[in-house]
Amino acid sequence: MNRPREEHIRHLQNILGPEGWLAADEDKAPYLQEWRDKFHGETPLVMRPASTAEVAQILAYCNDQRLAVVPQGGNTGLCGGAMPKNGELLLSLGRMKRIRDIDTDNFTITAEAGCILADIHRVAAERQRLFPLHIGAEGSCQIGGNLSTNAGGTAVLRYGNMRELTLGLEVVLANGEIWDGLRGLRKDNTGYDLKQLFIGAEGTLGIITAAVLKLFPLPRRRAVALAGLKTCEQAVELLSRSKERAGDRLTGFELMNRLSLELVGRHLPECAAPLPLSHPWYVLIELSDTDEAPLDEKLQHILERAWEADLIEDAHVASSLTQADRLWRMRHAISEAQKHEGGSIKHDISVPVSQVAAFIARADHAVAAMIPGFRSIAFGHVGDGNIHYNPLQPRNMAKAEFLARWAEVAETVHDIAASLGGSISAEHGLGQLKNRDLPRYKSAVEIAMMRKLKTALDPHGILNPGKVLP
Ligand code: FAD
Ligand code: ZN
Image (tube, rainbow, N blue to C red):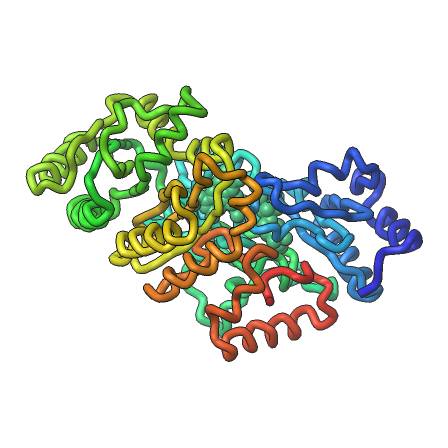
């Protein structure tokens, strides 16, 4: 790979036009640091193309000149995937934010990669449609980033993750060719499902420039409750029962341990839980429906039955939409609240739903043996078997000393997830954070297939080098 020289930069600036690039340090800075401040990047040029044709011209040139390119969306990814770590060119999709089409009868929206997720929600809702992907970063993450990480979030248990929410893609290949796969079809059996290659590829196989996404009818009713439980096993049983009783109306089921909510109360009091935190575990349950009939009664009924069966100790049902939103704000505040309490070693694992309690118990036991006095934070999308397991530093330990144990703790936690049939990255991807661990958890056959695909689509390795593949 070549390092970009003066003449390369000038050529790219010409393609992009005066509005389409940033080269001054203060202008580049926001693109080169990320949310957790774990990764920093460097680049000679932030490229901000305005169209698919410009992206194609850039890639054709970079492929020809052997210049590496790192794509970036909203820069909210948590694995350093969008950071140029070795002075690569940075390709930001943020100016490509046109909604190309919304087809309410086909229940689809065609959006460019740089559209902010929350804007898609808003545009769809104006037409009585729902785009159901909900994640904490929705105010700034972009559709291209969501696709490239196969984002998950809080509604996967009902609507699926980005893979399931996508019907078609437009992609610029490494050599600058444009693949127009913007089909809005629910049925299309004409060979390999190529769009799925680019979804979750973290920018290593092509640049996504637009997508056809699925829409759903906008729910008219919502009921939300917070229930307190004694054990994590009970949460899994409550999940099964809620699914049996509410079927498709169960659209949220989030697990949180007490410490995660205590930290929200301590550091972000405006998002605190509306009741005293006297139980070891909490679940936030949401039902929603397109029908006008009230759902509160149904949720009450589920909770009463659970209480009679000794599954829950207590429950608070939101009595208004404001209260319901407040419960969700509390859930989404957990990541931020943790930051204020010191260092935490973050994991984004998944296991079969039936193994969630076993995973947390084993991980707590193993981490306590390594770092006595560590504080366990566990929360997440239990309906998908996806837990954010983030051991927090002991009170009497220096943050740096605790974080120095990251690799060792992560390996232990990941080994436990793997032994239960799980994954080391449920929704955030691999980026540069976990790619080197891949050979420990995937077979040589699987990694060799991934390498062959990479070589076929990006023979010179210009797209996001050093990410995903070990
Ligand atoms: P970026 O961070 O900019 O990029 C992510 C990856 O995609 C990088 O490898 C980048 O190179 C590549 N990429 C970006 N755009 C393109 C493109 N157009 N073509 C090809 N490659 C591209 N994630 C979840 O799944 N669920 C959650 O619940 C969740 N909650 C979060 C909460 C908070 C507070 C934060 C900060 C993050 C959270 N995330 C969550 C992680 C993050 O928001 C998602 O991974 C999101 O999908 C990333 O989108 P982005 O636009 O910010 O992508
Ligand atoms: Zn999550």
